[in-house]
Image (cartoon, rainbow, N blue to C red; front, top):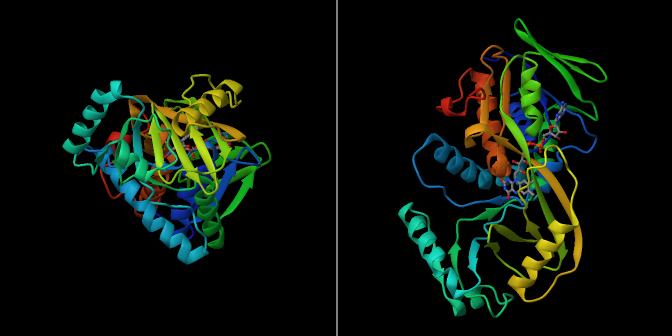
Length: 361
Ligand SMILES: Cc1cc2nc3c(=O)[nH]c(=O)nc-3n(C[C@H](O)[C@H](O)[C@H](O)COP(=O)(O)OP(=O)(O)OC[C@H]3O[C@@H](n4cnc5c(N)ncnc54)[C@H](O)[C@@H]3O)c2cc1C
């Protein structure tokens, strides 16, 4: 249970670290955010910000996913009211696109499984598709419409969460890498390249690097980087999120984002020309024409062991929490992770069963 004047060090200024900082600061807890880069969170900024549909089931992960998804609309409204900013939360809906009739069995399968899980979905034939998205190529054969898919702008959300935390007194040291961490009695000591910080608790929200930091405390937290790239194109002929063959095509203001790759290349953050060529080909296939290429980005998704995010205190160092391993859904799950960690630190309990998310497994 946190007492008045509690201080927490949050390591990592990605979407998860900023969410943790935001919810801690709302509990009147003093927050110090530490990040090794001057321009933090390449991964969170590479994200497409897709908030995917209802994931059926009754497991604790399914509940976390649904609650995390629902939290975004409230958070966007709260940040708009408090900070006067639009974080780009949009209930766009998505279309799962099938390019030719040979894909009919895949469409039927997804339609049946989605309905079985209670997920709202409509089948679209060619004329219905054309009516919803006039810019689609003539050859596109059919699709499924998922009205529950949303989007948020990850960069705007991250900036607004952090600006709100700063208003409540949070401070950040960016461009200063954490090199050592230790729990000392009732507190935590962190050494960075430029100095030392002490606090009552620490939260490791360092994305794919979190396992390495937890290892300094003798904990085995298994998370590895999986690179993802997206490309940005000029022009925005679409009104919905389009999902085709594992790629999203995302309307973003007057631009279009396409992604993402899934690459096992370790901690290599470089972008590649091959990925851009592949994304351009997708755009041409779906729209029947090309869009001018603007830029591309890469990030390292933190992939955990056993698929579930890593959220909770370390066994032998209970004043050090881990908030990582969100893999492909860190933007969707970042805010709810922040909310849970803040409650756990402030009240001594997470407010829900988190046993399946224990970081050491
Ligand atoms: C191309 C792509 C598309 C994606 N699309 C989606 C999507 O549509 N929807 C969705 O929900 N998710 C998506 N994701 C996943 C999502 O982006 C990630 O899950 C999320 O960004 C992870 O956030 P994080 O805060 O855990 O990590 P990060 O954003 O990686 O932040 C970790 C921070 O920790 C810092 N750090 C590391 N080590 C240290 C240290 N020793 N000392 C100090 N600081 C340190 C790093 O500098 C970094 O800033 C996508 C990812 C990619 C790459």
